[in-house]
Length: 151
Image (tube, helix red, strand yellow):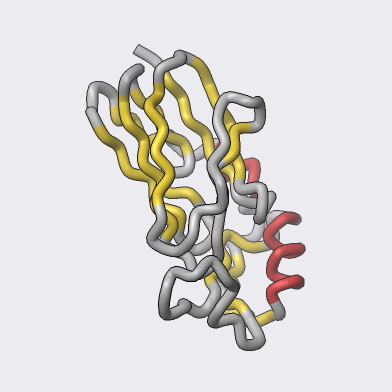
């Protein structure tokens, strides 16, 4: 059973980093300004089922999109979707920020790094090098994703 809890953004960030919540959504802002417009007191948090952790989420099945020219990744509710993506070399991967807060797409090694992506903004990467590339948002370090280039 999921429970809904409202807490200040700082509490939401701490709870998310500890794996206590599965998603955080903030009120939407009108225009894509890069500012934190629309924050007026709280974030909505969805509590996860008992026993569900960040580790169990990491074991989720990957989304396999081999031999596609373009693959989309949404940044929504403070998460990358799909979280674990498998593509072929030469695939163009496009991350689109659907949150009211800015986010980055930053690999854990120095393979790639975006600037802050504002609401409805995009970051595009052509996956050339084969390998496994864990990544995160530098602004919200509890946000993680995985890009695998194979084939």
